[in-house]
Image 1: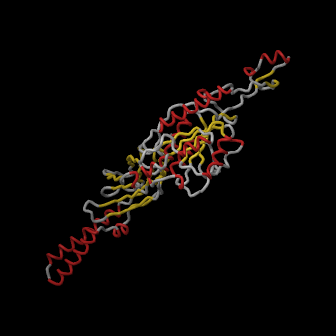
Image 2: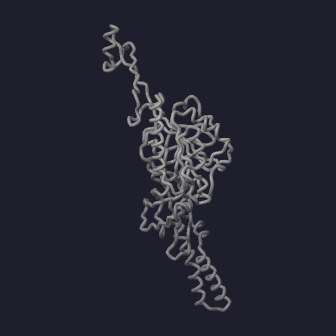
Image 3: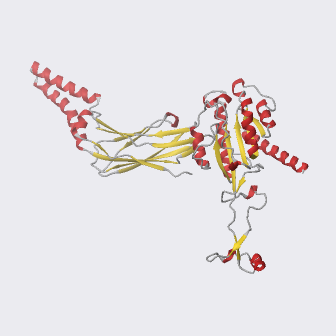
Length: 431
């Protein structure tokens, strides 16, 4: 889970007589106007009693402004969001720490944190009983049902007198970010196959096939640990021989998301593109839990800063939008990707996509595809047992299954596993 990120605003002053006079509310200005009017009428009419009333009405907001202005406060606001990365539908907690290094404020302090509409309504707090050099901590929860990156803040503080005649406002510019990743579905384990390369540090035992250890030896060097001595080789050669460092192995997988607008149907949250993003996020999460080093590629290929980090790839999926690209970029299918596992999440396929899909299949030792039956997002009618798009991908050597808006992803994933088992059995029979 990502660590919470804390943002602290600059120190601000809340107070001052001039600021207080400029902070007269509509009620306070009405009192001033009524007081002046009463005094003028009293002078014209010669009514001394009316003069006293006018002076009282006029002085009241001025006294309130003087009291509020003299209670100068120095406010520091810190905000932390935990966790910073959540799945759609899961809550996150926002912690606010408000510290005053100045005088005690007069009246109540009202705090209001600006929250995007997708995360809920604004969070308002009333802070009372504040002493000199006080500190208060408040918390609230936010939750979004849609993916994306959201900015929480800024925080607005208001100091008002008990009569509501004067109100001072300060906005603290500090904001915090919350990333909401797509919804995911827990997938069952299936025989995936492929994906091993000698550039990592571990190899999940659940998918191991053969030995990942290089047992070659070399001559003993000063400083080598005795537990690495290979006694059989030493006896045969006549001098101490030690095992070489184990060749590190790593399970690598690539998840391809076809994010081209032309291959998807529907709009907004109810589109086939959003369904494809959710499928890709589920597969990324599943492969990462299975021990694979996973990277995400789109129709534009892999990003320059490709790090094989599942958390970073989920953040990319949180912000991804459809592109207008006409073709799939397969520049990432180099020698370094040969022998790896590729899982593609595709929309509708076109004849121009055949060379790219054939190239990917050629470089991958195992190629699986979830084909989104995009036509069901427009017609809402059941499709055939195997839609044309999935059939076309299968003819290119992929293991492909279709997924519609009413289909369960975990069952489709199991169908992929059964297809892989049948393919492995067929190869064994041929051998």
